[in-house]
Image (cartoon, rainbow, N blue to C red):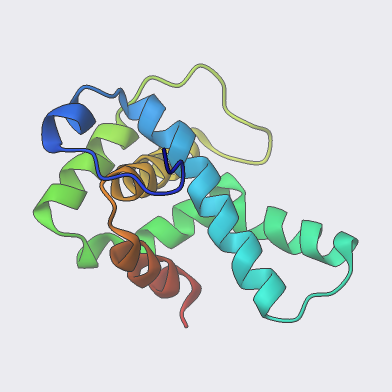
Length: 132
């Protein structure tokens, strides 16, 4: 089994909760952020960690979500809204409830696209979030 390559069908994806999608999407988003930062020349572990935290914190993810909302397809918008409306039980310090809902929605979208095998689309959206 290849644990890096998934291509779940619509039924399989719709059976997953929004928070399950966000759970995997959180890891996908962080891996993309870490890969981007390593490739951009950050060299020390401390500078990599700080830059990663700055990119993956809920306020930064919420801002990134705002940048891509108009570019989402109808299907992606539905996944995003489903993630945004998920019942969260705690909000991290440094984030508002609105930011945390937007971050959860973004993570759900990234999880959905990853599990659907849409790597190219993930790269497009991540590049748009970064403005590169």
